[in-house]
Length: 499
Image (cartoon, rainbow, N blue to C red; front, side, top):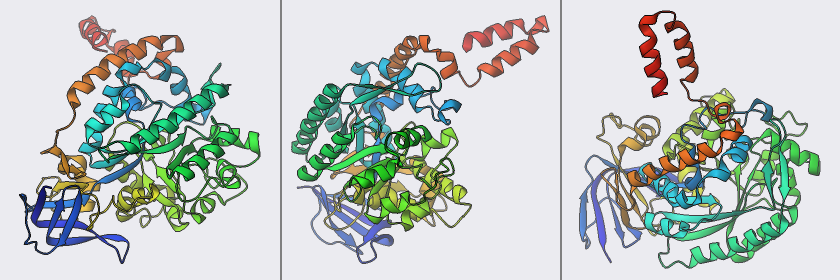
């Protein structure tokens, strides 16, 4: 068993068990043996195989990403950043899913995962919940990555479809959903049995509106009996809120509460539009308390929603209510630090309060909070006995200086640029900012091919309306004015060729 000794580390973000919080330890040592931490303190004098000079470094716990769709979301680069649908209360989820998703080449999904896993590790993620419809090669790329993985294979009894721009409809196929559910149970058990010890599973009915209530109940019971966490997307759009009210007469959160589907071991994907949201205008105001009173987890993913012009309005309220807050990336870019920063800044803007959603709050959510939501106390912290999931931050990086508060400097300034090395389960996966386990560039290049095929298949859905290029309008305006003079005709022609 290899013993690695970080000696004389400038800063260690250590876990204080008595306070249930992270604290700074200055000028200390950290040692891990095999895949677990064996020493954190002032000086270590025991045996070691490798010594790492800690001068100018800060050691932080690996980040815990509890909600992501790595294999598919990366195919939307350059397509979804400005895409929203006014007729769907600004969300672009349904139009994009109905138009693009069926045309993603499943044979290329392992490359989507590989590129995304690389980017997640480069931003400090060491534990990842990967929510996806299973595809060939998924387990192989999970193992190859070196990440600590929670496979969350989705299942559903209906799918979304659209016949016009303003309505969302559902195509029900219960036998298919039952088969997907059975296969998902087999897959999470297979992940848990994997000899690496880094893989586990989560039982994941896809969205609250696409799964029959009976299957939601059955899947939650299976999760409890087998010892798995249970997660689903809920309260992620006004459209979904209205659909659930129409079907059941209560909000999505109240629907879950009435069926005892909240509580420890449940993670709600997003839960960004409770009854108190200004986007909802509902008569009740108790959804957040229903979530928090029983210790439910919430995966807060600010990026997709801020692109639609909305955000979680009460990050501090969720915390005060007892909600176990975690952070997810959900979409591109797969940069966990950017999502933590957005959670902090947008939380303050939404509440008109610069003292809420503190940097410490979101850092906790991205580490120990996410671990708690996953019902784990051996990740998301640097403590004796915890897993050796460690981020090495270069405090001498120009964007970290002056590094008087490394967590604040990392989250608000340097971000992934200052992450030098990453260790997961005691194995190094990032060295000097380079991915050791995956072919980042090679995988990304295959996604170019996949996006081109997807776009070609979507032309019938008015692709130009769905995702026009950012500068198309500028080019047209420029052409209108420039062509008034023959002097600029050649430049206009060249510009059009480039676009």
